[in-house]
Figure 1 (cartoon, rainbow, N blue to C red):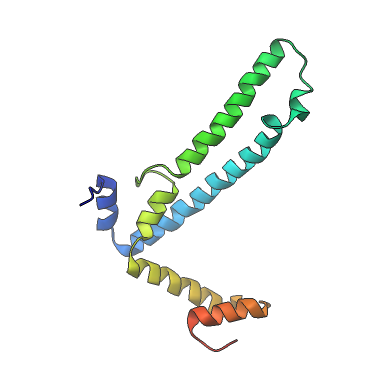
Figure 2: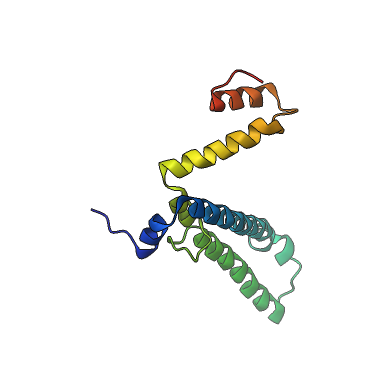
Amino acid sequence: MSKRSDAEKAIERLPRPERIGLAKAKMTKVLDHFLYVVGLHANNSFVVFSPVLASQIPRSYAANAFDVFQRSMYQIEIVRLCALWDGIDLDKENIPTVVKLIHDAEIIEMLAEEARSQHMSGATVGASEVDKEMIASITNRSLI
């Protein structure tokens, strides 16, 4: 028998529409955090892992400062990546919290129905044949 945290119990007590609203709001923030980590990683490819920037710093006190800068850039990338996967908590904007918010068969069906209705309301205009086949298979309808 697994122990559920207080946060998990609190999430399960929330009404489904509220859980969906929270999940959507948090997912928007999670995406922002994810894009920030991607940007950090791209910058770290130059700052930490490439000699391009380091070769422009002469051996001096600035070199020591640059070493500290490199380490801090790398560490913040790791910290931000870990934050995306931190524990479930309604106050946090992370993947496990969003997953817990939507981890319910009825919520998944509500979200799927919402996505289907958005796609069927004209979002398929200009879609490729592959997209139309995929949408048709999801909605169990004939090709558009």
